[in-house]
Each structure stands twice: as structure tokens, then as C-alpha cells.
Length: 328
Image 1 (cartoon, rainbow, N blue to C red):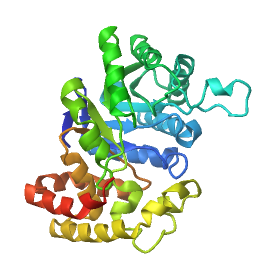
Image 2: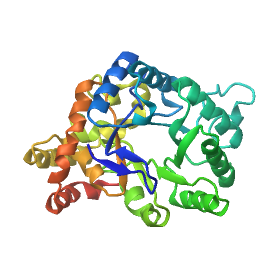
Image 3: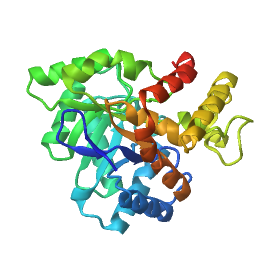
């Protein structure tokens, strides 16, 4: 396992990390999560990603129970969560103050809720899960900075924020001597590149932005499993994942995946391993968040590390020729 600095911070994160979106509680119970976290740690993974909204808070509960069972020294692992949507019933009086927002009141409640669900004294990385145009950025920056000052979090960042908002947050923190946003968590894969490669381009040098990217396999599209429809038991078959169907069945992208599989075969790896390695090849990526509902998937994803040295400029050019024309 390789380790990379999280942006300009001194924190070292594993090149590959393990996330819990879709899987924990929904597909993976505490016993399975404990087994996979142990296997991930044995392979050198030290960062485990979560979010308040995943499985309505139950993903954090499952991960927290797994940490408790494993009894790891707290220094040895990095855990994250993300805030924005909230867990309040939207029909409850006053619930508008707690959901789809980054206001101070919600954020102060949210961090305490995540700490309780995960059974932790602090969370290493906290993210603003989406931008909130209805809340002044300065209010959000001060609340996130206060989480760190209070010892409830160690670093904060954003997820799927526009570059202008990230820069505004960084400038406000700089001006008022507050804790600055360190990292951004964007979607990044062979068919989704614009934000990471172009929109954020100035931020890497100007602010030291680090990336903890998600969906390296485009929700499974880049594995090739959707070439002939939605297979039973796949992510695309889940009732709450219907919004992915159109993209997963895209004929042009599935044809490109078939071409990428040829390149992968020449490198003695799977299409999925090639796709994960391609994301990790970007020097601005601090860690690639992978997902797994089975131990076998975790082990397969880890094989991407062996592919990294094989991604020569010539191979990268071939991959780009196939995928770049279809990228968003």
C-alpha cells in the first residue's frame, strides 16, 4: 500500500480506502463489516469513509460497532463522515432547520449525532456533503472550524462543491484565521472528469486541495457487468438505485468498457482494477474510495495497486482515446 498526504496537511492516507455508501446496513451487517474492515487494515488501508445520510444513519452505527469489535488503537485508522441532508423527519415541525442545510445549528447537532452513532470521541475528517446556497459560506466555515477547535473533528472539507465556493471558503478561513478546508470529495472516474481535471485545476496549487474521490467504477459500469442489462443482486438492481439505471445501460459507454477490458486483459488485470488504478494515477488524488459488499470484491479492488506501475504514458493515451470522448 502507498500513502499520500491529504492535500497540504500532514495526514497520510492510504492510496485506496474503503467506503460504506449503499453497502453498510443495506447489504453489509456488522459481522460482515468487521470482517471487511479487518481485511482492509491488513492490506494497509487506513481510511474508512461514511456519511450521516447513508442508510439513514445506520451505516455509521454499523461501522462504529465494527470499530468497537476490532479494538484498534484510535491512532491507527482514519474515519470520515459528511453533513448536509440531516436525519430529521421532514414532516416534523421545524424540520426545515435541520435538513438540506449547512447552517450552524444543524452542523453543531450533526457532529454530536455522528459521534454518538459511531461511538467515537472525534471524527478525523468531516465534510460538507453538498453546497448550501441558502446559508452564508462564512457561517458554514465558522461552524466547521469550531468543530475542530472543540476537538470533535480534526480536518474539514467539502464534497461536490463548485470551485468558486471552495475558494471562497478557503479565503474566509484565511482572512479570519480559521481552520481551512483541506479536502474535497468529488465523483471521479473515466466517464466523469470535468470537475477534477479542469474546474479544480487552479485550486491544487493555490490552496493545496486534496481529493478523496468516490465512484471509481461509475457505480459498477466500469466492471462490465451491465453490458447485457441489470444483473440480479447488483447495485443497479437495488430499489433505491433506480436513478442509476440510464447511465449503467448506456450503449456507448458499455461499448467503451468492452474496449477497456481488452487493454486490461493485456495488462493481466480486470477492467475494474484498471479503472481504479487510472483514478489513483492522478497525482491530485490523495485516496480512491472503493466500495465492496463482499470480501472477494475488496480483495479484487486491492489488485489495482499492482496495475499502477503498468500505466505508462502509452497505456494512459490508449485509455483516454477510448473513454475521454464519452466523459462528462
